[in-house]
Image (cartoon, rainbow, N blue to C red; front, side, top):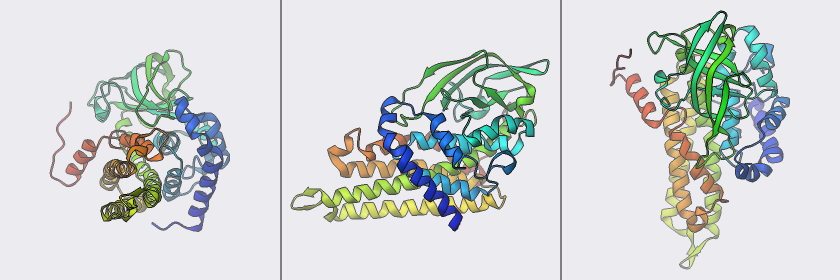
Length: 386
């Protein structure tokens, strides 16, 4: 994948916005364990950055997915993980299926204001008993006239405490688990919704994460995205862009971590020399940067094929797997070189150490990615499901 002048200008605009409007406030938002999503998203919407690859008819840029990748990569310039993750939920996790399969009326009501930054969205998949095992979710919707009545729980939901709507994966029949689910747009001010708990985390602190209860929440059936019973398939497709986003958005944060560690090592005096004079330090940092560039190449290749309309299940899963593991490796190695300074809260390396740990859990754990790869490689069979 080759970034054109247009790609680079988008990144330049976004990085300038980050320097002026986001990074000066990150420490404050991390301390508060929330950031003002509506305010930040509206400014991003005004810049045209929340729907680069979404249909022009609903306020999007109508560009191909490589532009979304360029934006994701530039989001790594933010000096924490929580804010870019929240933005990524809006652009690449809760809106792809809506943009692709939603009716025009549904897209006017929910997608257009999300692209404009007037509404904050969230994606409701995980539950207390069903995280990586998406097929095992228990929330359900029964029909009542022209409506659904939705009951159940959703947990680990990013943006949910501030969201105006949820793109919710829910059982809409009692059929086989891969064919009984639908994606339904649920306004978060609907009666019967309880934002039960703000979940405190060891990282991603500026991102709000909620436990949400649904008790006979009435939603029109016309709020369903696409066909009934196709939600699992739609969500699996949506996951591919989420996983590519995760890989692209990690690159700059890892590069920054390595660069800051090099600068520290060149100043830190130990045993009559600098830390950077130690060959072990030099080699480890060189190795880490090589790994980051290898991940970039994998991510760019997956993006190229995705733009061409090819199935990137295998490559996106590889990129997601590598991202989670490499972020942990980069942060842990660099923190070790910082010594006691790396063990302080205000250190950027320690923030990546905390934030980056989610990469091997959220959006499908490492073990799920390995299971997918074993199937795409033909060395494992999918077990039968009821």
